[in-house]
Amino acid sequence: MLLAGPWTDSTATPLTGTDHAFWPPGVRTAADDARVSAYESALGFYHGAQWPERARRGESRLVLNYARALIRKTASYVFPGAVSFSALAPADDPASRDAGNLAERLLASMASELDLARLDLALAIDASVLGDAAIKVTWSQQRGGPRVVAVDPGALVARWAPDDPRTLDAITHVYGLTGGQVRALFPTLGQATLLADRTYPVVEGWTDDRWTLTIAGQLVQDVPNPYGWIPYVIAANNPRPFSFWGQSDLTDLVDV
Picture 1: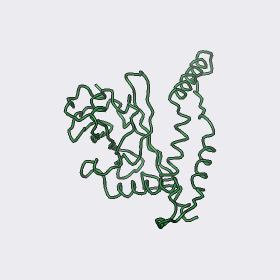
Picture 2: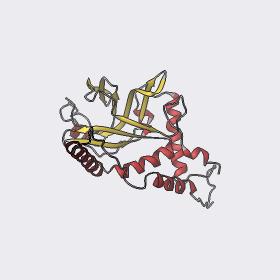
Picture 3: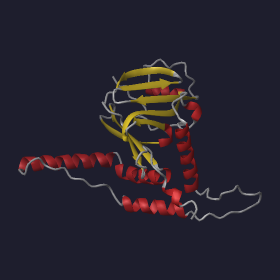
Picture 4: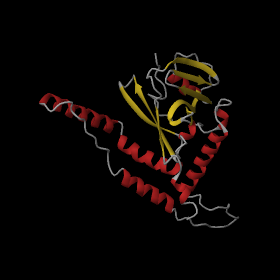
């Protein structure tokens, strides 16, 4: 049985997912380190750290953040409103058309409840700035419905088929939770000794077949994947043909 966890019922932001010290040895490669470093540089540039050298004592600097303005405006053109969709009826008869209309209403209601229009815009900006955006789509037993949440791509490591970078084989997701959060989210996993205010590394491992959960270096769950697929979606921005990860749009703007 899949316990209610941070992927379904928590709104707590992962604390240290990009901190290399939180990662199990051998999981992150040099390429992953370079990717996360590029994320940090791109995000800094997006937020205005655009001078190539550090400021001298007493020096005042002016930054015209054209990159931020351009990316936000472009994203607003790509997603000017909620994404529309239609459900195709299997036949052209009243019952089929009614079923199609009902499906459209249910999907529209779910998209509104999950605030997917706002999430689409935010992810478009993330993908443009960083080169990648990520979401996790899971089922909340407590709420009786799906959950769609953004994930920091820097907190993810992906492994894909050697002959096809579009075929995802495994995802490792690392983030931090306090001892108090761990006990609230996993009350049956025997984590009573964790200090309430201390942050501990949490590692989720996903393949199509298995789901593992490690907290503070201890494996606490190793069960069949309840979904049958990896519940993450990676939106790679203009990836190279042989690459899983994308490229930041800021690469072309840094020298402008």
